Length: 217
Image (cartoon, rainbow, N blue to C red; front, side, top):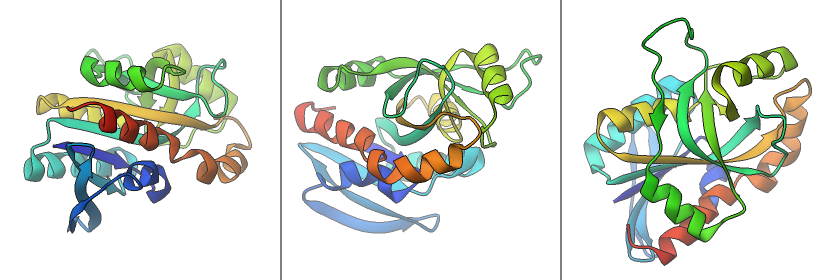
């Protein structure tokens, strides 16, 4: 089984539209899920993973209940690398929590699944690969943006990917996150998100759906 998650419903619509047939509708920890097929792959779609705590909680619950082989997280993110533009799609190669002190020796970096990265690139090669940094803070200042980039060398920032990556690593589950840039992580980012989110959010999950149509995982 492949689990595909997102924070918002709009971010998982690209995969939901390709889910046929639908085999089951249910609920897990008060979040709705849908199970079905994309191609010949059995897929479970869930949204509502907001922030590091909820993301980790949901990831472990999904792993315990459904025992997936692959776990893919889709959605939106803010640019940290100044070269990243609105609409760029970033596949995370490594995941790190930027709101944990980097003076601590136990800060861990979690790596993405090589298999998933290769399959995604086979479908969509206009993609950026690099670090995704996560933290329970909305980044909307040049100072904070520069600090995170200096400490992590991340392409984008979100509030969820690193927490899911950590849980998957502890459970030996193949993980990858695919994110689209919807804001520049600067002053005025909230306006950018409102303008770009609905239009851009479904693209990463649509890419994953196309990948699952073509490849058996």
